[in-house]
Image 1 (spheres, one colour):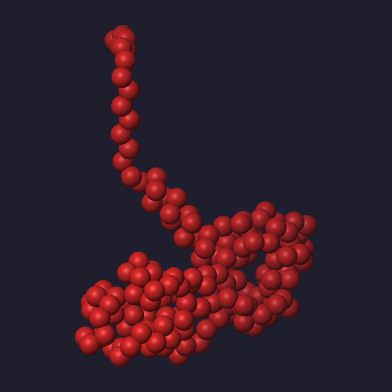
Image 2 (tube, helix red, strand yellow; image 1 turned 90 degrees about the horizontal axis):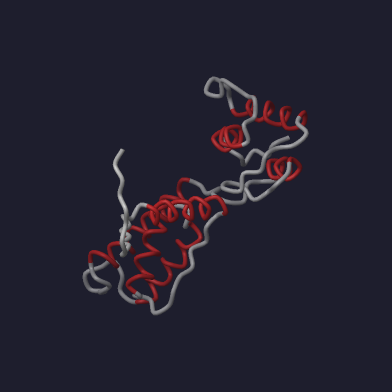
Length: 183
């Protein structure tokens, strides 16, 4: 059976990513979707790995992943709200106050470090990533904070960076003599 920590959205993502033949997902409850996913996976011989989202490469790895509790991105709404509020305070500290204490919510560097260390484990949330990036860019703490990202978010960010790098206009100039013919 699929562990309860996997949400219906996670199961729907797995259905789409691995092209499982399951339809009409919106009308079904999570328990029914989970049962259909497990029955479908048990009847299959293999899957096509998709390393953009998951790091396992065979059917057994996918089944084992679904049977185990979800490790990443499984936070309560209250924890998420607290992390986002701390991240917003850090963004205000970095951007709005320019890293100065009197006009921010913080009294000294230890409070900033405490909040930064707290939110680094929630780096899958874009607001937390932005706060860590701003702190690292401004070097307000004196050292770099490494955000803890899930495999899936790392791959998505790498993909975005490749797309972003390819969007810049490029100009090439060649010198020499060229022959142009018109038909």
